[in-house]
Image 1 (cartoon, helix red, strand yellow):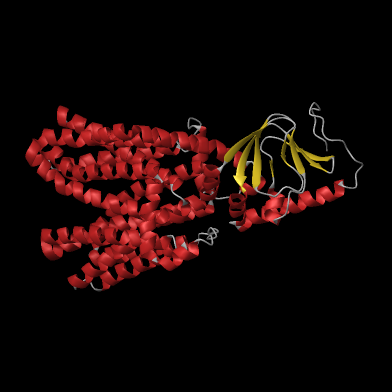
Image 2 (cartoon, one colour):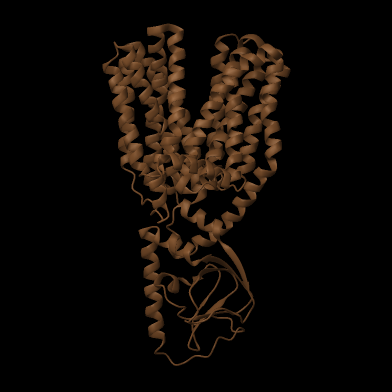
Length: 566
């Protein structure tokens, strides 16, 4: 481990020492192992019952109903407790899977229950992804969480099918469905153990409650219009899913017709894909502190396309295997960076519905890609189809490169602001969504030396954090205290709804980060931990000020004096 970069170790440690994150990741592992087991078992069941037509029907029932339900499930997740929704979805998943096992001799009933079970699971990923920011304390930790999730998804993709194979060989699909029910139940129990404080809804949300879920879905679409950078991520991710759908067909073409790998080569190519994904997911943990998530995401999208072009042009077996390793690595990079970007670019109040809409778009793009590629193969031939498909993503990234760079610039500025805000005691316990929101709203003010920031008796309309410089707090001609970089002031008037209780004067040229009164009050009163911390600070300041009033008068501070008073 000595060779591992510090950011890599820190990301691992932050995920493993956070109880909520451990429970959430284990819940995800259990749920997704069950999903991959479920996919294998129900495909075999459908083939046994109705042959290839049954497999096609299962594919349709897996995609369309869940895709239609996702926007509504996402809207629901922004209205109720996300933990509760995770538990309910897992419980319903367990019940429907167990019901399918009990009704194994009645295909129509089994197909119906399998469809309902898939819809229940469809809510799991976007709801958990929307919950992760609340469970994290820093944006860097969030990137590490998504990387660990990608690693565990890869493990689930391996363990689930192997478990299905063992159960199907020893028993029958009913046994596999029982295992799915047990795994879903375990995922729900783990999710029920999450302990966190949900953000307190703002009063403005009442009107939204009356408007209903339909309005919430529409609000999710409007949210994307208000955050075009998030829309860029979804559009590029949708393009990647379109190509991925095509690659599910092209992998067979490459193995059987383009190279000499043959039919077994299809498994070899997807195994290479899995190896690349695992390695990249491990490596992406070390990128937890990166402020270049936008360009990393774009690079991953482009890396999906370039190897496909090379396979079409070079047509060698070793080239094809190496290309799928690179594609797998690119897929993991896109997954980690893409979800992290959406979690950071979209407000927590609408995050679940935006992520659910994203999943719906991605599912449709996958289906469209797999449906369209046979026509492309007919029109262009094997080589032409590979080159044309591979060129789509690098071209899309080139078109949106400026937007990705703008995302990096925004995240870089926001990262510096978050570091500053975390130095303020009452903000240290804020979850990622709250601190990100404050960082986005942070203003800046330059105050010349010997200028008052505000005076005693002024209305309290802002909160200040010192970026650089020094200020003195003065009451009735006495210096009460001096403050420097990382210190904050202005909270007493805002939290007590009174006029300024003292004058604050810059001792030297000073740069202040500023928050409006409503923004500050909303953030601090949004959780019990920050509210309690802020109240204790205010009580301490007021008590200290009362004691100092009994001291002999001290003149206004001398800006040349180099040490702060006691």
